[in-house]
Length: 449
Image 1 (tube, rainbow, N blue to C red):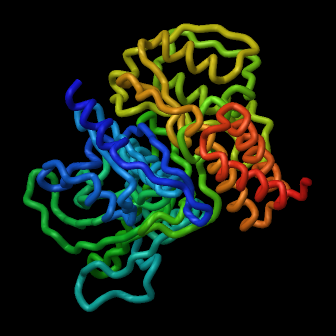
Image 2 (cartoon, one colour):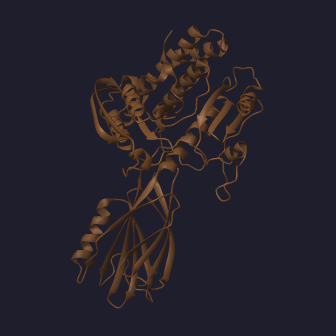
Image 3 (tube, rainbow, N blue to C red):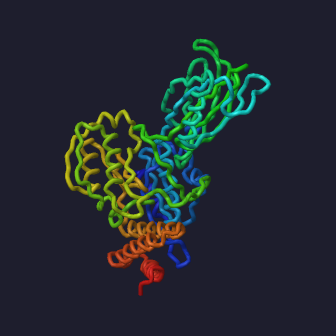
């Protein structure tokens, strides 16, 4: 209780008055952080939350505060909405990266002539490296090997690796050692590759080492000249997957430090989703749902697919809900079977039933519905929840406008306007001047009088 009291005291120690030229009133958020996020990557020692976030380009002013409870991985923040938005997106990216795995498929092509390079090197060695970004490029290379004189295509082998986990794959006397690293947006895999020769049981000889970055689902072809009329091409395909082995779509970035801005954020709710803003999970109706001794991890994936299939909102690219487990191992999830049959229920009700049967809980955090076991949540102000929800709608509208989607942008601004108006009606004493200014600004933008 003393720790909790200290955390809350840190949050509410400072107060700030709102001026028209400031980004907005400070609000309080109770966030979940990946358990190792505030640890040194080498020593595993705790690091100061402010210093860790400053390294990511997120800083806090004198009227803002942050406190972290390592026992529950909870982050208590008091800051303006722009700061909280960036922090929310950063944590979301880290959570996604932490649950991502890499499926590595290895293959060997042996030919009497080169497939990638024009001529041999002076001595047998690594000759050429090429990144293949499409299945067609990879297939064409394999076809060329099959059609070449004395061409041999060895059977492929696949293994799954964790982030920065060293793996080895052997085909014949070709041994490949690999350390994959997944990018923050789950779109790219960087690999440190060590190529070795040597029969099983013997000390392998290192013939080369290289570092390569390929898009998820792409491949790298590494060509070696072994001697006269003897060439070998190693193929490695890397695919970013979730713990169930299903491909993870790239998370579109939001301009965080070290990331390229590629367009709209991939999050449907790029921030905590308050009661007035959970229309997405309430409006998606599932006509039928049936699980029979279905492992929870599989049930989560089926719910995610159903959310996309039965979502009728626009734009189509943002349909569905990201539903995933919160730091529970696939083994423990697989041991939680779910048997359930429902008809014509909102998605949120289906989620509640499924997690309840599995002895878990859910939490809407950022752009995701997280499934796991959570500590009791801080009772936050509903007025702050509504303010933040309205801010998120305005942010989405701005991004849509920049992408040339004016109709969708106007729809988001209308949603923001309704939220600000609801805030003024329910909580007339909460930042009245700021709320009135936002209502007037939005009405002007959408052409209402």
